[in-house]
View 1 (cartoon, rainbow over the protein chains, first blue to last red):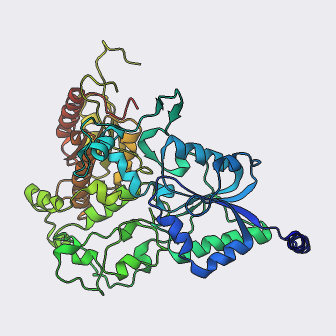
View 2: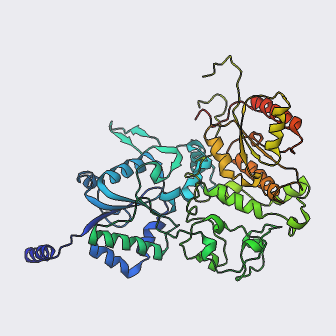
Length: 357
Length: 141
């Protein structure tokens, strides 16, 4: 053993490059992003060749205390997935930011809030009520919910992280250097990110701060479906309402709400290839500040009657209402992955009378 | 800062099209019509230029109401810009309701260049309505 270690050390001394240190962390997430890292299959070995993993809660047994003891900036790259919705997430995010040279928001939740970000339509109290009381499989007559701290019979104080009312993105919590969007990021884009790591390990070079590891154009730009010249949707369909969906024709032209027109490309339009509309997981196209507003604007302007430009006929107010009633749940549809990063960030919940604000 | 005794004065962001409602506001001014000073008017070339994010941004920054003005149907300088604006605003109004903002805080009106009096009336009505609704829920936060 001792000899082997010496040999390794010699080899390390021979080579000019040292391995870089990377950390992977998950906050409010489903775990899919960690799986996405493994989706690169044998290429994961390349990662191990250039990098030592110092923290990866889903796969390896490291302790937070060990990371806490490390010097500031001693981790080269941190891949952080998941939104920030509890005091624990915030604490670890701040710790990893301090210990890492480069912080990457990995996946839509860390970048924009993602699906957990839809929790911003409710608050802690409402979420607890559903999760610990109202769900049919829950029997909790005393409505016991997680407490911040409690005393055991032995007089020991036990604490739990605080669950917040509002979900935040990673860059609303700490400074973020790069973004890898996607739910989860596709294999090609994960490989791009690995390429950035490899280049960094080799030369120390990094792309400009704030870079998004995806395309600089929107999804429609790379989509291969055929489009009508004048785009008008008379009737909105949800995919299950149609017997057949033409795999060649633009989904919007078939009345299916597809978010591709304001969503960043780079995913390889896999949903669209499977005859399902884009739901916007890659976040807003470059230069768009508010994803939902951009999608709403685009969708609303293509709703209408065919040839209405010639006849200049907007229809009666009832007709307009009927047309717009077909768009079910605009907030959930247009902000599916980006509610916490939107301008309004969350739904306003007025305190009930007698309650404190 | 307003004390409790003072009457609440709503802050209205008005975004109007160059050809009709802005001209109506101009006419209201030159005709010396009186209307409340709560509106801050912005001019764009067409009501379809008004991206929903302008409106959301106004609310996020504490506006109590947003007023959008365009040309009457069939009178758009760019043929169908006001139809796009109409559908955007109506859909946005539904979304604002989901966000917990009263949809009445967003108002769309058509005023032709000759309707200075209508413009003054609409701003008066809208200001009164906003006084009734009170400060925007986003204002204190």
